[in-house]
Image (spheres, rainbow, N blue to C red):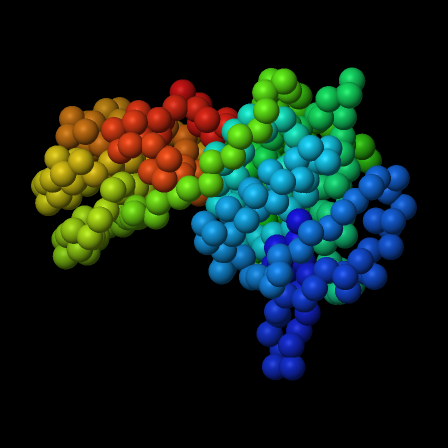
Length: 332
Ligand code: ASP
């Protein structure tokens, strides 16, 4: 499924990179024809830079997987790197009962460039999507393959914009490493019930906000965010293991939000580790006022999970479900 991204971009007349269609791309990848696999290509009508991705595109990707699910052993989604971790997280929540690989990949350099990483990323992603053992898919989950590593989609983050190793999953081991052969880390891969059928929920509700704390954050800013019309959930990206200043204004405004029924979820700015509310004095009050500790959820997983849950469940149910494990996105 080709959605766009640098992978298939070329320079326009003024030198900016813009997406072009997939048929031109296969000319740069003759090896694809040598893989003894049957591959079909579906393209987004208009390939996009992934900075333009929104929930409608997640719905489209999920719908394409749903309608083609029975006919294929696995799926590869070519996607821009900028928001790939968001799309991978969203898909992992939407595709309930998934028992086939959905592998997202892309490139840091367009396939038309001699030093591009596109070829290697795509070929290995296809091999992983097709990999089976005893007739069963080895990676029956949504994952990102990039720069020789396979990572769980909802644990991944884009961490690099210049080097080829664009993704990392600070809180979860790689699902596979591709060298001379592909080494699968079997104990890290989700074990799923292959008898279960796929059921796809496509609704999202974007009535959420995200505040990243920084020293000196202004009261006016906090106030404006919390008073956002129709706000249903607020994510606060705190320091370290979930710490926030004990400044009374912040705590007062968060307590006010909780009282109004807004779900306040505490996740960490750190790439590794987890939120443990109450470990330090600076997080104890958060716990007391009803802020939910977001464990080791990434920002990408927290944003998409809340939008997904709010779209499909009543607010009170979302409050408990947000820290339940859906697709390996958190460790309880
Ligand atoms: N801006 C591009 C995108 O996300 C970057 C990339 O693909 O690497 O679509």
